[in-house]
Length: 365
Image (cartoon, rainbow, N blue to C red):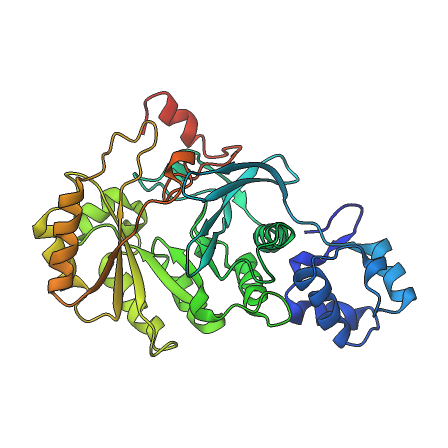
């Protein structure tokens, strides 16, 4: 994404792409290493301040390039310490990014699209419709903004320990932009996160899972939410294209690239829909031969959903059945739900090109 008047946004590039960029400018490739450190580790976007670059190069970069991230337009803070930022994009759209501090970790939830092209029935983002994919600069720019804002607040040199692409959008439908962002997250000269601390969440885009495995196998989370195709077709319409058997086959292929890893299966528990003991046993059978961890997520209500959260006892019963069958299972405690920052609640500001939000407002499907 060029900045303006042909100015190249260097946040668009991982280190390999930056090396190519400098080589094309007649510069030595190691200049890319220096610029990555200046921009991502130190948060410096003024090329004139990059003192280990030659003055002529600094001037050339200032004239023809830039490093522009989305702008934090608004911040909300939850009672539990969760923070949600509305990131304003250059075209007037906005995406939401969530920071979740915990005693042993600090996680940033990043968006990959403006809205979402999928139409999962339990997700507030889906009701916003879809506008476009985010660029690499807009994806990594969310981490850049959060990282340097938190450092400036005195939260230490590495205030974010984990990144999850679980915000607005389906990351595997935007892999050309997502992959360079992932590489920057992992790059020791940028954010230096390990693969197990970067998680990509997908609704089940099977070709994308295979491509991710080959290109950048980070931790994988799959939004499952049902133990059978009939129910999953209703909850996650993408299942009609990539049914459960195909999805699980892709998951088994994926773990070949991370032999000691488990796939995290996210399961939003919706009262009276997918939370029965029979469904818990069916889920255990389904995942019996997959290296799996199950995250149970009690449904987070949002206006107009028409769905409810199960009672705590029902959630515990579902969890105990899975544990009794040998599945590693945790119940995710809602974080930031008082500011609509919990799983499934992100909405942002979407100029909906699908007209889905209008149809839903008018009572349509």
